[in-house]
Length: 378
Image (tube, rainbow, N blue to C red):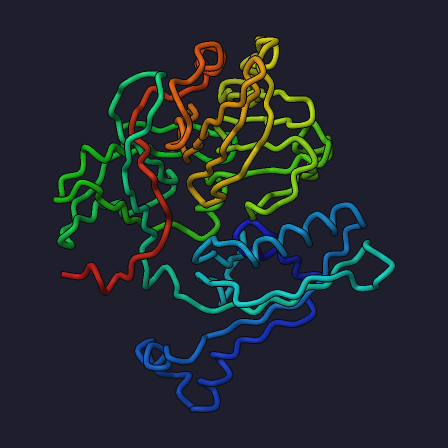
């Protein structure tokens, strides 16, 4: 099975795959040459076209088609294309240039056809994954610690700090956290031994290993559990902030899940218990004050390592907005009062959310990208 980010590309139902860059090289008669020849053609898009079908019945096929359609319109950069097992010559980092996703037959949603046009960015042999930070101070009353932590997959290798002037230094994690998907190593920005207030972490990681320990937003589609008893996923991954919210939404980093239910005005949190390999309910819904309702969920950022939503609460008849940030590897939510919201946070609301609220006043504001190896060479 191939994947573009976390969207499956079932090879058994793949109808076409064409590598236009390979065709151009073949026509030029330089397939035997080194990678420098490919770089000399960078002015022309190195495109890969994938066509196929989802043939898993109306419910699952429609869910996957909607995910792929949203992914193609999302702002997520440099998506990995890979096969989970075995080699794949076209594996690498791509941007989705265009996508056509539609039912195979207008009156039948059991089979969906897709065609993806991908623009080649590069391979991990030429790029490091980069976790760039742009720290900013939050306003809340949950604590006053100043820690600045970021998470990287534990499977990452050659983890280094990259400073403002291009200096590099090896990086050592301060701890490892086990999640429901994959272990995450936690790094402290204040431990970076390079110049700059906002150092970048660069690292090498297999395409398939970087995806599981990211952050997600899910549309539960009315299902309480993410998977069926047979292990089939029921929750749809949301890739767009414009997604129509009609069911309970879940913000998850596989260590903490925040269940947001507009229809019932409730909020619940679950923590991953690595000892039992299961989710434990924190109990927020049971302790929810009668004077507080979740009024609105506004998705602000749906990214790879950091999701952000503005939650509006009805607090005893008055509306109060609170931003919620869920970072990769964090075991708490970073809540913050929006700039234009009058404070402080109502005491009853703050007390209710305190079991899952981070005490840190610093949002590392991390984002994932790529750094070319030739840009950090000595």
